[in-house]
Length: 310
Image (cartoon, rainbow, N blue to C red):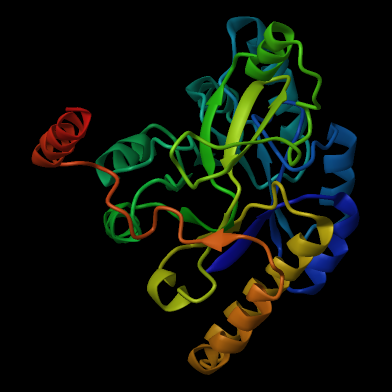
């Protein structure tokens, strides 16, 4: 198990490295979303300063035809640095890397699509070398996929969860149609709540469209015994303050160290108490939910709905 963090600020890199964390995902010019966006010069300086670390750059949007030439030039610039890997979902990115013969770890991370082992094993034959599992399937299925897939897998263990996105400027359009004034570019300011639901979501817009994330943070700090087979344990720092990100990373780093020392079962209650003290909303996400309905369940729900309408 190795922690991998979406880097929120380059000024905090030293703090993470001093904890023993040495694997990071960097947002950049062509990232779909990220807690921070770093220039090529920023990335170069970080890689040069911390050669012992593994850096992935998120080139993980779906790109229009007119962007491909610029994306290709961007990947060429990354190839001249000691970048360990690229996080991607557009197969055009994979094809560029294969055509050029670059030697990146190509981590396939399409948000909601990595839900079965057979697809991932086929993609391995096409040049995918690691993958992030979808967050919207139960832990039992994630563990089953890991047993059958023949490449390193990344599992999100903490942070807000991706819910949905659109390439359209939905908030700008709504603002123009409604005449309301609000800051729709802030990651943390706007929330939405579906009617007749207790769930609240963050919503914001950037140049790549509109993004929706859970307000609650997924947590798996007390589940290391169950997820110890995964190669990468991912902490998503999007929507986190600098202080929260550091505290969360420190807790998981300490938990992994205690796991290696075989004191985790004794120490985990103390770690959980410290997590609760952060006073951020946490839950289990989809870990213990069955998200696919059986046909008879759908018919039952439809029948109950019809009954209540009469």
